[in-house]
Length: 158
Length: 158
View (tube, each protein chain N blue to C red):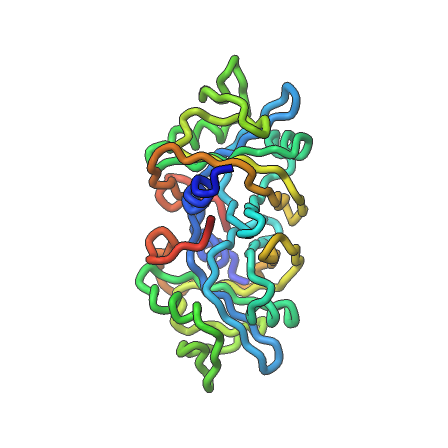
């Protein structure tokens, strides 16, 4: 296989940019992720491929609770903020005010839309783990033009 | 949970539109899918949530070989063609000329970019099955502006 062609082709897959958050006791994890898609209508399930060595993975594996925030096209700065290690100061996480959601996962107040999930299954595949999550709460407070990888300065694929 | 808010939020997830194809002996399956993302860099894995009652699922479960075609923004008509049941006439599948790829999966000649995979794992989740596939061949013959669900007249989510 021509690895250049493989990279070029896999970078044509369309993905959004999301901030996922989780908490376990006093530990918090949050990260910008992109390998995420719905996986079932009934029940409503989402699949996300997440690095198992990440802080957010450790939290969601322990607590089983995750929040997924859909970023708006105008919120690149928030995506950027969650490339950095998780840092909670008072009621802010990486500088973003948050509250505890229904599941206990941190909800970013700047999010136009988010949903909360309970982890149902985890499948280790290569250098990521597929986390299968059931959507148990959702809120969409404002119209949103979702931020996509292709409209961002970043890429994650290949 | 407010199911209207759930649907509205889940439809904000960004996805592309792809045609996946598979063959098993003289049986062929092909379908337009959207719940698909990369899942690992090493090895290069892709995850796709596919309806287990579909013809393409039966073929890929038997043969273990799949081709994923990235559609260009100008190829809505091709996406539409693969919403219909699979029909092979001579060397065409749903009206599209094809050849057999490295894995035996049908390769659409109209595709700007495609990759071929070997199925590595299948996980039933709700009303779909997550198929984890390793990319073993890829070709990107022309520059492509990928077709996305949000830029199409269709939706598949909620």
